[in-house]
Image (cartoon, rainbow, N blue to C red):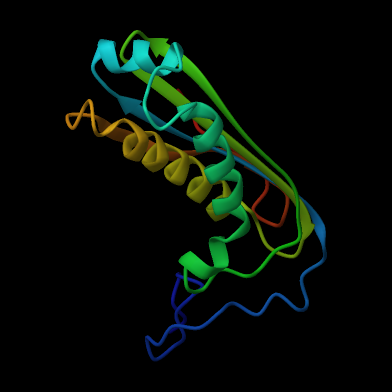
Length: 159
């Protein structure tokens, strides 16, 4: 019986999926994460008063770099020719930061993992840069929001 999980063979061993015969198509993915913190920490971040510098600028760069390095972090991911990586931040409340990562490429496989890794690493970077003033921060809700391209079609997370 064939496994419904594409990274496992009939004997249960793992392998990189062969995408050679798949057509190259425009692939896009959007992922998000949230980080909850003390209001005072958020204010220090907004005012750029933390000792390590501009937290959001560094986290943005870390997220972009992380997307580009996804196949080195997730063992069975294909290296992809990313054409765009964007990481943005929005305050949902005075203690809740939303992170959104968008990744685009033309390839034979999707960029969901690249978007998820970008959002996760951006959140971890915020944590790292703020932990000296707030060890109670919580990273939450790392999730795929949308993906398009390829045989599986368009996915949008329902609210």
